[in-house]
Amino acid sequence: MKKLTACAVLLLFVAAVPCAAQLKPEHGDQRPADRDAIMAHLDKIFQGFIHQDPAALRAGHSAEWVGFQQGSRTIQKGLDKYMQNTSGAMKNPVHMTSYKILEIDITFYGDVAIVPYICENTISGPSVEPFRRKLRILDVFAKLNGDWVQVATNTGAHPETELEDMGQFVKVDDSDRKELLAAREAVWRAYFAGDQAALEAALPAETIAISPGSQPWENREAILAGAKQFAAGGGKLVRLDFPRTDIQAYGVTAIVYSTYEYELSVGGKNSVHSGRATETFVYHGGKWLNTGWHLDSTSPAPAQSTQ
Image (cartoon, rainbow, N blue to C red; front, side):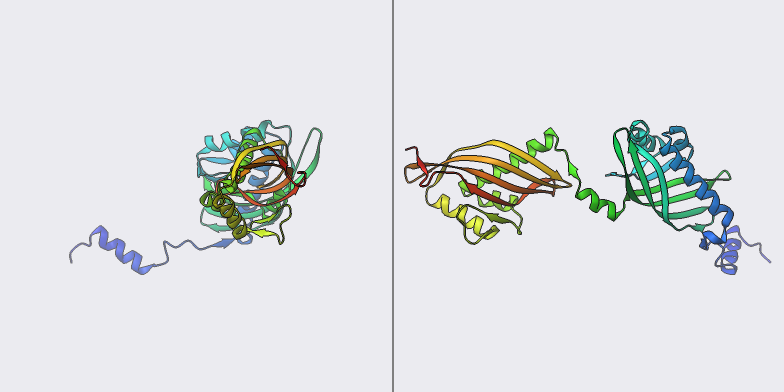
């Protein structure tokens, strides 16, 4: 009988035991010792955040760790990147002071464990009232050199927390304020110029406008028609000023309160208009969209002539 080649032997073995290479899922309750070891490991990671201990965090993750942290826009790769992204949390006086796991499930595939869970963290610090944030996390653990260690994770805010964040007051920094004011002025100038393309790009379909003397309220179609009619009639914007502006921002929504003054030239005659404006902007698609406004008028009636 001819000798079987190594390849033939392997094929015979695979045919005889077709499930040999399959990993059978096992629930955490089926492996209580490994389950408890992972829970203890998770606790050490949380304690690292609570006590702002970088060494504990480093010890809890593999060198080849990969995944997403809160706010990640790209895949984060390697332990050094993980530590770099958590360095702020290690120094911030306002930080996690306690945690509670609300829901968790552990499934083993050999020496790999899939661990989805929901936790509620308490955040506190000097002159800061304690508040809670829920996270929705999926961790991957692997048994390396006899110990369970986190090798991957996906960390994000729980939907309940996202809703709360959307309603939180946000301080508008100089960069956002500059973008908002530029977006506001661009809409006003586009309207008086009859620039349909610019208005279509700045005003979403659901835009609602309340202007002085307008009955009924105007939708996007009516706004575009009004701008087109003004420009077609030869109207020109001579001057536009916003003497006072205040901004409130909540999540990705900003409310811009202004006093306005503008001068128009129509049929060889100039008129000055002034009043107050409340405008709503939503950050979407990388820019601020003007979703609506309410204007009132403080202009003399009839409007002052500056011919």
